[in-house]
Image (tube, rainbow, N blue to C red):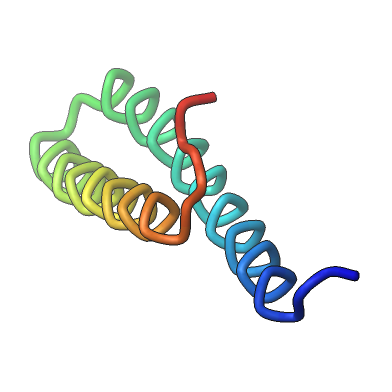
Length: 73
């Protein structure tokens, strides 16, 4: 029988991995928008958002690793 604690960790890891997949998709969209943008103010805002999104990716990777998950796929 599975330990309930293990099930909770697996559920948490699944949620964290889902959030990381959203952030990965966001980075791709932001990079595309940034490359297409010509307005300096918009580029600055997109760059700021891209930086924040990459920071969030790193935080998620750290949490996933702390729970024993793997982010190398």
